[in-house]
Image (cartoon, rainbow, N blue to C red; front, side, top):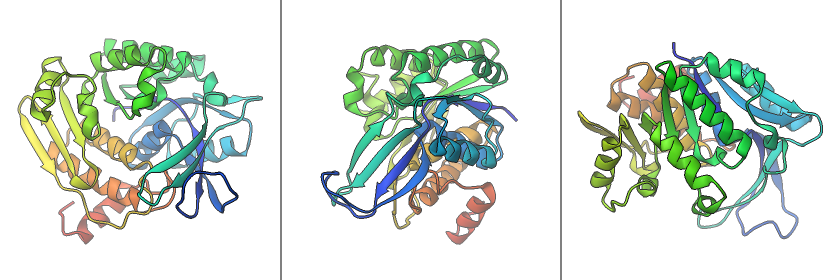
Amino acid sequence: MKKIITIGEILVEIMAVESGHGFTAPIQLVGPFASGAPAIFIDQAAKLGQPCGIVSAVGKDDFGTLNVERLRRDGVDVSAIGIHPTAATGSAFVRYRPDGNRDFIYNIRHSACSAIGLTSEAERLIDGADHLHIMGSALFFDGIVTAIFEATSRIKAKGGTVSFDPNIRKEMLELPGMREALAHALENTDLFMPSGQEIFLFTKSTDEKAAVADLLDRGIKAVVVKRGAQGASYFDRSGEAFAPAFKVEEVDPTGAGDSFGAAFVTCWLRGMEPRKALIVANAIGARAVSVKGPMEGTSTMGEIEAFLNEHGVPA
C-alpha cells in the first residue's frame, strides 16, 4: 500500500469541562489529550491500516511522550518526530461557548513545533513516501514550509500525489508568507479538501459549481467539499457524488474534519469508488464527534463496518 506522510504540529489539548466565555477565572479542566491537526490526520490513517508517518517535533516532557507513544501505538512511523531538549510540547486550552463556538489559547509558535524542519530523519521519511497530505494550519513556520515544499517536489517527481486541506482561520491568511505557501500547495494538489466556504479561498467565483470547475481547470484531479452535518460532496471531471452525514450526538467536533480527511485520502489511494469513500469518511467523522478529545474518536475499519451496519448501510 502507498505510504502517506504529513508535516506539522503536534500538541496537547486541555479542555474546559463546562461551556462559557474564555479563561478569565478558575474553572475545571480535563486533559491532556493528544492533538494537532496533522497528528489527528495521520493517527486516523494509521488506524485504518495505511502505512504512514509524520514530520514534527515535541518537547522532552510528558506531553511529548503522550503524543509520540499514542501515535506509535496506533501504527504511525514516528521516526521523524524530533525531541526538543528545552522547548515544551505545544498546547491548546479550549473552551466551548454556549453557542458552540470555541475560545482557544495556543502555545505553538514558541513551542517545540518551532523546530520542525527538514532533518535527516524527515528526508528519509519523505523519500519513502508516496503521498503527502498538506494542512493549512501547519504553514506558519518557515521550517515547516520549507520541508513541505521539498516533500512536495520529491514526491511529485517520482509520480506520487498530494492532498491539501486548507484548514485555516481567516485571521491566519495575513501571516507573512501564508498566502504564498497556500498558493504553492494548491498548485501541486491532486486532491483538494476544503470545508464549506473554504472552496472560495482560491477562486473569484462565488458559486460553488463555478468554483469547482475553476479548480479542476487548474489541474486538480478531484475536489471533496466537507459540509459537516450536511454531509460531503466529491467532484472530478467525470462527475460528482454526495453522501449525507450520519446523525449522532455531538460531544466534541474538534478533529472530526481531520479524521474525515484521513479516511477519504486512504480510501482514494486504495481506489475506492468516490461515494463509498465519502460514506466511510462521514462515518469516521461521526464517530469522531461522539467522543470528547480530538484524537479519541479515531476509528479502525472494523469499528466503521460495525457503525455502518448499525445505521443500515452496507459496509
